[in-house]
Image (cartoon, rainbow, N blue to C red; front, side):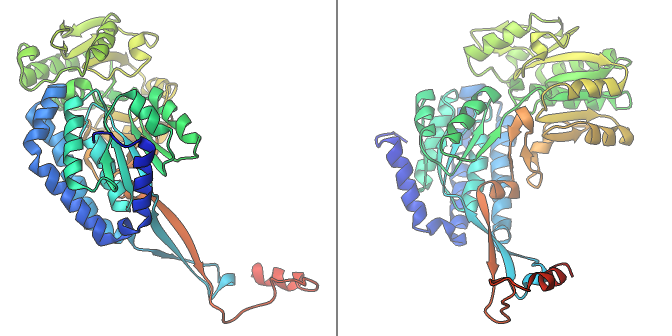
Length: 460
């Protein structure tokens, strides 16, 4: 939106709209979800073009990672909303009978969604779907680093929704600061842990709950008992889609020493198969979002030994799909999330030592294991902690609406997708109903002579 009214007024208008009660109506929510789906589908070509302009995103990746996920999430919410929103009866201790107990989901109120630039449509719209389904009013603040997408989101949302119900506020960090100074009923943020701390500190001033979808160094373990060709293909795709700018992309490889050379040769083969002899000329390979990120990534190339790729072009924001060998845990490349098309490789011999090393690091958003060893799969689940785990593939855990998505520790707080989104933007209100018949005076003063009988009844 073209911000003419002060931000405080925009927030207050939404709070007033929420107090009308319209958003609590289930049919109202379903209608808005359907309008959202129709509106985005009508702008499919413009979405693809905006993603191309901001990130060099290939059309297939734009469709599968943004448009398809949005449509799937809306359809899932429409299908299940009536069930999610029904009050649920729950048991009451027999001592309180004939009382009945229920849990009522109710919307939180006014929500702030601060989106990220790497998947700039779905990282704004997926939480919006959950907020609408739960019955809230919403302000979306897209990332200014993806300006074409930000502008298009504002245009589409402005056409679909009343501004007092849902709106988009564009701008730089000063706009974000002004928004964070307001009182919201929930703040949903996707981005880095550094900014996440700022969001959380600002939210604390108003005791506002937060969902923080952050990132981290997601390990990818390759066991000796695996299909090397399929493993290499899936790692290559998962790491270099969107030029590696994904919070759940494999951040580093931990490969059994006996298959390391064979795996890297296979990865090299699939990079060439996917993107040709020179990925810079491939229509299927993206670009780095801006010069700041480009320069940060190029600096990381100075650590270790480049085994594959390494070519860069600052003018075109191009960094080739790159594998870096001979790195150490103390190198800068292993101390922070890479968030780009650079994949360090470390060899291991003892899986227990590899797990111990993973557990010594901050908890990652995702953990990948390529292995046909079911015992090892169980060991990974039991002995590691991460936002999610995916066996024998990459990224796909994000695409399942029945799986809550979110981090743990440094990789995030809270989760969303499917019902988890509805839950995130709802308050589950406990309701006890006690009729007037069969009233007992045992609980009320005077208490003289009642304790012995109360003990017998309550401990029965």
